[in-house]
Length: 242
Length: 306
Image (cartoon, rainbow over all chains, first blue to last red):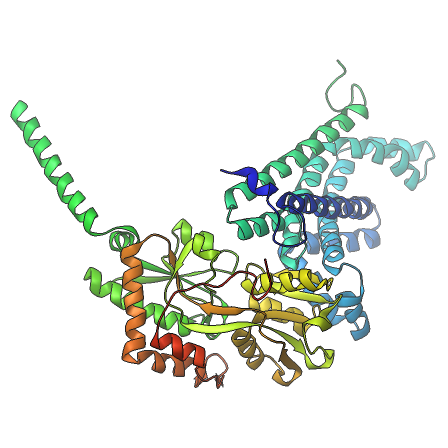
């Protein structure tokens, strides 16, 4: 094993191979975090819709979840990147392919975001549905409207309940972001592959990538655990007060 | 009791000696093939006409045919007429690790013999001479490399063409936006759909991709050679016995003139899957190599400085 390879001048671009790793980390973080923002927002809305008593709101959300979570992520990535620009009007397709800035990057963000949204939606729904029905009824009996029940009764508890599974989804998005390499985003895994192929130091390249992924996910885990502690409702959920 | 133990010891020792004697005869790849009864050929999925899959998913091509001649030679050498051939798909990016890792015994594709790769692997005598050019859409108006300034160019990850193009870009400060792709078919798709304006590749592969395109007339192959790319079958390094057998087989094909038959079959006749004839006669460079075979490599950055 010889990690000095990362300090050798890189083949192109003027820096050293470590710069390739750093640039890879940057793209991984950007793709994952932006995708998570989409996933969390869209997923929350869908999750709420799936629990409403109105079938007309539930149905589209259910269709969304079933479509997006049942198609492999890799296939979705290809659909966004290769298929979508060909089925929209020619002008828009051309814009998607060439004129929009960083098409690979935004494709990856949207694909990963909308895919993960379906999973977040299910977590949010399970959180809301795990709250005893009596609480909704009590809220309504007190004169709250249904949106108010969601806002003040169901969501505050529901989100707290699903912090642990949401943490898993958040971690998964960092790992899934490596699928973006298939459409040409030079994120961490792509850079590791590139370094191994330029330097023939496969073991070193992937060791570094592995360590970085673990560091990222550990940081997220610690942060989410802190959040969980911070928002805990003593005596109701989570670990009891010390 | 003691006598029996001694007898067993003697038997073990004798068995050990026999094994050792056999091991001395055969080493490396030949031993591996003898032990497993299988020759593993690494092939490409989209490097027509060198190594690709036809519409029935059969692995075929000019390189594959030459490799099958090597398999015949191995069968004769090991006296194992029933040797099995197993095909393992590789890409430009995976070919070297898969070969050195031992999952294939030779790679029969369109691999450039470069000095840099020779640090990792060995090459059989060159069996084709080509070089880097770019394929563009006629409608793009691109006539040469300098027209690529600020444009998007797709490359197949792990190729010498990638390096030649990047070295040129660095030297001329063209500010090209590069996107990597998995294999030549996917790279060409990027040009076809307009995601990239150009794809640098060995010109022979570009001619073949164009011939198989939906509308061949839409594309043009332009530019001077950015690099020279001699193709060779890739073997594991420091395996003298196997390398010698491969070298003898390939040069044997050259001496007997059998190579002309194989060449004509792939470059001057109709080939699967679409029955297209590439009409690509043997270049003078290749004729010279057939007369005087060698396994010399080229520099990685083509005609630019690394």
